Length: 237
Image (tube, rainbow, N blue to C red; front, side, top):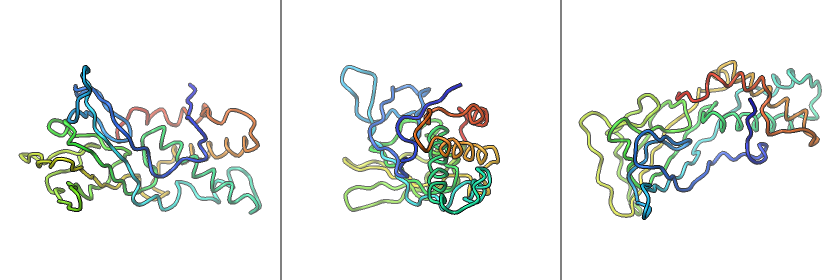
């Protein structure tokens, strides 16, 4: 099965997209990087769709990669230091490409997601936060102008979702205020990343090295990578 990634996968940013999330007002619809079951927000006239403005930012980027420079050089059978910078870039690009494909953070980092309104999924099953796997909830704040109110103790992470604690209601949201949710995500350091995903990084780095002169289809995943990723597709960690 062929998978494609839009754009040059050697230039993926660490600060992810920001924009509007359009989801219909029934809870079976789930989004990607930022969450699921968004229903609260402004209605689009004449449709059953509501709008929540959302922004996802990496506060603390990954400290390292899933595989070391030396490990990938050994895999590529490179015995000199002249291409160290290239190989390091290929590792980072491969890791970012896998993360975008799987909605996962391979190496630990701190994420902030900003919402313009409370997602309605919080009232029922909670809201999926991406990327996973989620490790710890750091803060939930209501920000209005220069003032920020910490409401973290009313929430908990459970099963990859941000949920209200039992018997706690959603705090009132002043006009023009936003919600900030900060959490840590990722498997941990490089050694904590599952072996199959480490191998996938090596395979993608090898693909980039092979195609470094611009010949071939760099957007297509090798079949071996597809096979390695199959157990993670559609799984919420």
